Amino acid sequence: MKIIACIKQVPDSEAKVKAENGQVTWGDAPLVINPFDEYAVEGALQQREANSGSTVTALCIGPESAREALKHALAMGADDAILVSDPALNELDTVGAARVLAAAIQKVGSVDIVVFGRQTLDNGAGITPAQTARILGWPMLGLAGQVKVQDGSVTVDRVIEEGRQTVSAKLPVVLSVVQSIGEPRYPSFMGIRKASKANIPVWSLSDLDVGAPKSIVKRTELMNPPVQDTTIEVITGESPAEIADKLVDKILAEKVL
Amino acid sequence: MKTFVYIDHFKGEVQPASWEALGLAKSLGAASAVVFGSGLDAIAKAAFEYGADEVFVADDSALTDYRAEPYASTLSALLSSQSPDLILLPTTTRTRELAAMTAVDLNTGVLTDISGLEANGDQLVATRPIYEGKVLEKTVCTGKPVIVTIRGRAFPKPEADASKSGTATKVEVKAEALTNVEGYSASESAVNLGDAGVIVSGGRGVSNNPSLQAPAGMDEKQAELWRAQQGFALVTELAQVLGGAVGASRAAVDAGYIPYSHQVGQTGKVVTPDLYIACGISGAIQHLVGMRNAKVIVAINKDSDAPIFKQARYGVVGDLFQIVPALTEAFRKKLGK
Image (cartoon, rainbow over all chains, first blue to last red; front, side, top):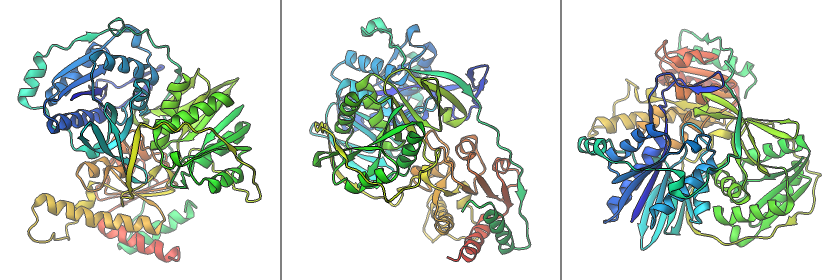
């Protein structure tokens, strides 16, 4: 099987991200592979192991610096990587990203499974996987916590608000995976060496034969969340029962129950 | 403004934010509700009661289970023929897919998980969190209809008026499906933190009860998980007395104490309950971003320097294994439960 893991590069989750002069800034925090996409790479590698003769390609839209995220996927064990980079992609919205990814997936050709993480840490909309599936005309199996491929079909356990739902579809499919798929493996020493030497091709929009997508969703303003007025009142007492008693009275007086 | 509202339900159980979306739609003008599935009479009636001027129903056995493709095709066809300016959906695992695909079909955009919506002339401006809620953006969609999924509890729920009723309009069903639903299991971890009025959360600290002796024969990790289970049992008991949901910090989830669906404070899990009680949570930045908009925050932690205390309205510096059961008992007494 030919498997593609779609990844993105984002500021580290620990970064102090804020709005400054109409821009999003994160100081000197590093850019890393989107944490949810590490699960996508993990899910893809699991399927490669379960289906002999399979390959995993990591695919990323981003600037030149996004190579580092692809190298992380290679170090985890992906066979190869492709960077889609073009100055015309700087103001990309989700459906635009989906159109570019779909074109890249078509260019790779004969792909069986495309794996996404559930969402990115930056935009966080979580809708690119389904949009990519829709554009390709492939079934979408979203939020999979478990994946099994057999006889040209994929069966997943979807993790939804109400529990788990088992859903199947015929290949090719688009998947998004959630954390239950299993902890992403650490890059191995050999993997890191291989990744550092890897030749990562860069595809432009003209390589993909698509025009620059016009963004339909536009940002008009950036804000930092309002700072809450929090003066803490520390509750003390002689015993847990006394503390609990005082605290419950305070909470009841807030009339939030 | 002509607004459609998609009523999301699972086996007939409506996601409460659907009604909040209907209330928001009414505040903008005329509102039509849209319901897909089978056996929908009760939901259609409820939609009228919550204020819908009109209800569109695709009631068909092919739509019994939610599946993204037929739902999206049916919705896209309906929106094409009715041309509303705006469609509102509650933000759920289903509607993210449904909105995403419908936007592709109609060449428009989706504004997800919004907490504010204002009209600026004839343009709608939505407020939504980005970077895990560390930053907010105002955003517009230049396509039509504007597709918006709203965050639960961000908009008031309208009062239902049982005297209201109407006749639902049938919608043509596009039944072509690419997936099969094989089964469903309601896991005990099923949880919807977004709709919860009260959340009691546990962190890594829940496994640190020094007075608990793990059963013999367990290795260190097993013993830790066992202690965490006992700790979360206390958290759960308090949540139950308050009619609330159980949350967890990322550290507790990563350590395997509780399924990740309970996690507060990673993308998509910004919660806004009226009362948030953090037990044994130190307060990593992602967690604080995820819960700081709760109305009243209570922190219980043995470390007085824990960052969580900087966000809290009330704090107890102490042993959660003593404080939490005492709280459960005190609430039980005072709430008469």
